[in-house]
Length: 474
Image (cartoon, rainbow, N blue to C red; front, side, top):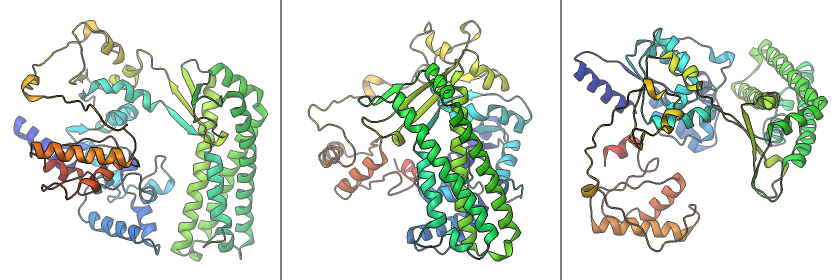
């Protein structure tokens, strides 16, 4: 991506005959938190893969100017990344304004930028913030604009896995009482004051788990239909459930607040004894803090969803498989967008926007896209450009007559079919060939089967090379 930004910057500079600064902006979770990474470096890892990743990061730190972890092309679901990136909600430790802090540097780059590139999701969440950083009312160009309404609704959607409390309770108990490896109770055995505070945190966690599970069981009994894979939970029914179990909800809310207070007390006492702890001890404290904070954040989210169950513009539904237990339910809530919402949340912070996209309009008279984008057709100008792509000469569509049912990477027949088909196509016309997959796992399975069967070099994204290397080789 940084190479693409450099190309965009050079192209714009040549076009306008002046230096154009281009910046890429992403959510904070994409960036390396140096404080959290430093904590991880002090740990003596037995996992060789994690040690290798740390070594890669140290080398990368001598080169990167952004701290954007996407530059490394790691698997974004890798657990280690969640231990070294910035958290979505800033903590006190993440308020640094040192010049080496990557988020601080991002703000400095944005303030000097002539052109900022971001994605739909970030724009939907941070339109006002971008304007404040630039201290002006900038121009806005939205590419693939037909995707903006869906991205906007997605940022208004909250999905709650209702088994989270049980999972977090287990993680917290493991850190406190595990008999395998270091645990907090053993670490604090010689400090009765800290041990008592920790016991309070664990006691509140246990009580929260019991109270929440009782309420969740009642919720599942009222809303879950065993034979279905999902059901619509009407807001009026959710509101009735909230009123019916008001005492239980209030008890959970008070216990959540009490847990937050006890966690603050625990952290304060840890800081007062700072000289006593080893780096490995601090890592244990950080893990405990993270898991308890995750529990508190989740319960606060549930509370907010319950409070908003009476809002008319909200929709709710449950997602689950047949005969799923209560802890396997997912509650999804989203807001219905009104006509002025994109204007209120995005457009007002910019000069009149330019919308581009290859499939924006099916005809000049089609009203659909205007409604989707919250635009008035009377004051919106539309320009359609002629395509240089000759469909008749440059496109062939072929449909397989017989093939196994598409499935996941665990279906050997389907994987073999794809590998054999790609090999035959390439042998028929041995030219640089791009194959698109909708699953990273399926891509890996086909690559393993196909590799070395074709004389040309095969590049697979996130497997045999970075995304930039693969694109450059096409």
